[in-house]
Each structure stands twice: as structure tokens, then as C-alpha cells.
Image 1 (cartoon, rainbow, N blue to C red):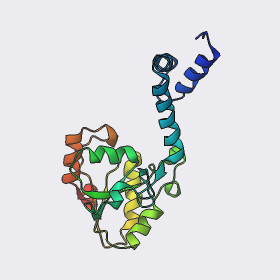
Image 2 (image 1 turned 180 degrees about the vertical axis):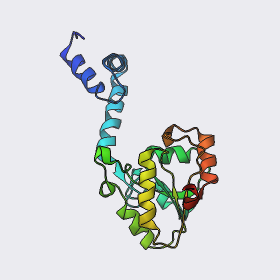
Image 3 (image 1 turned 30 degrees about the vertical axis):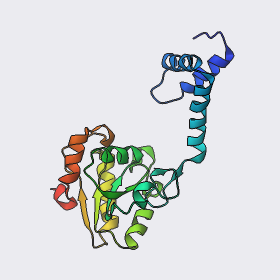
Image 4 (image 1 turned 60 degrees about the horizontal axis):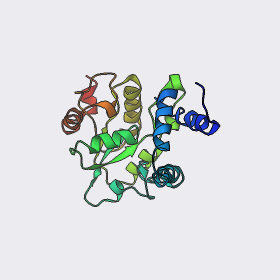
Length: 204
């Protein structure tokens, strides 16, 4: 692709680094920005800069947050005795959109995947164990994608957590095997949370 400006070429190259964005889409986005008021572009640039420099991760659940403790973990209206274990922030958002869950979360930051070199030590497993040692939790819900990596992670977590006297459940499999949690429709995901089953039952 030939460019009439080095500045344009540079901006397109940066946008094209985003996942799912090719050069043509990147060019369209850049040209759109060029047609906006300078103030709007400055706001856009500032939002991205602040996102990268000021974003935090909740010290309790590891969800993306504006403060040291996220709004969910600090809310007295949430049931802190139920902890829903998810892969990442996108899954928190997906479950929150169902309006069917009022507990708190624990974000692992990924799934165990030996093929990709991701092991238990790369995830926020130890901090989950520490949360349970502090007491107060009555139930752990595994809400992980119905994939081989998700099942492997659940199996490992169950072995680590079965020492605690708490209920361990997993979301009902209204979700097809191989399905990513963030792409499941809200009704199906909501029902899967509500109709969760004890983890041992899901093995049979």
C-alpha cells in the first residue's frame, strides 16, 4: 500500500497492530480520525494514554479496575461468600450482563495450556487459595470456557481447592464444548450460572 504521507503510513501501521485489524481497516480508522475535530482526536488519544498508564488490577480478584479494589469487591451489596472463577475480565463482563449473579469474582488471567507454555504458576491460583484461607467463602463456581484448556484448569483447581470445606460447582453445560464464554448469549450464560451443578456431578 502506497501512502502520500509518512505520518499517515505510521499511524496506519500502529492501528494495524490491533487484533483483527488489517491495513485497509486501519487506513479507514485513521482517515476517520483525520476528519474529526482536533479536540475529539485529543480526547481519543488521552483516553488511550490514561488507559495504559492509570489502569489498575484489583488486589483481591485481579479484575481490571480504576482503583486498588474494584467496585464489585468493595460493594456491600454483593455476596462475598460466593466466588466465581473466570479466565479474564471479558468473562466478568459477560456474566455481569446476565444480571443473574450477585457474588464476587476471581480472575485467573488465562487457562492452563501446556501447548502454549502456560502452567498453573502463570495464573492467579495461589491468590485464590489465599482468599479461601482467609475464610468467609462458602462456594466456588468454576465459570471457564468449555474447552480442553478450560476443563484442564478446572480439574487442577479442584485438586488444589478440595482441602477447603466449601461447595465447588461448575456452570451447567448449556454451553457447547469448545465454546468461549464471552461469546455465549446472555440468556444461556445466565441460566448456566443459575443452574450450576456440583463439580463432581459434572464429571459423570
